[in-house]
Length: 182
Image (cartoon, rainbow, N blue to C red; front, side):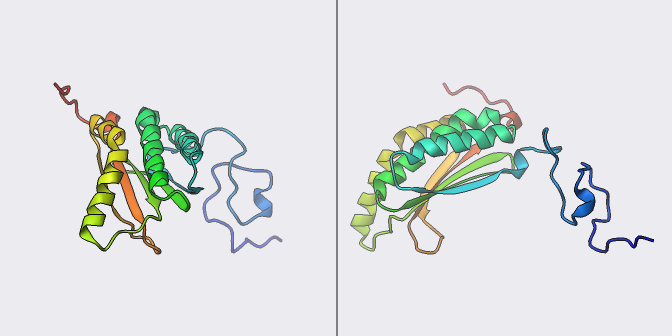
């Protein structure tokens, strides 16, 4: 007589797998789309070297993530936003590492880039540095504004300091109709 496995999941797995009985861990389906896969689950991040090539790597990663989570309408703006943010971060911190985070929640995509460029204690130097960074983000600023989004920059809340630059891009499929900008 077989005794029940005390480590097995109380509900049968929705995708039977030939090895399911040999494992107490859930097993992913072999192929096909995952049921319930939508943008609400998107949370992707990566650390990149401070390099001109990093923006291209980020564009490919963001494009792939948005397609995988059926957020295609956000793709052109989000891919360009990630590229612009990483390009600016590289100009401000050309020898460190850059960190990219892409998350979807509350019907908006948030793209965040962290770099190691520290804040400045002297107010004039801090103002000049912020003006320089903002000048590298002119195209980005217009892109986000045209999409109906918001953006900002400030000190990183991560250990080690640095700068955090972000954009929030609303999912247009979830926005009420807006009159065109005139």
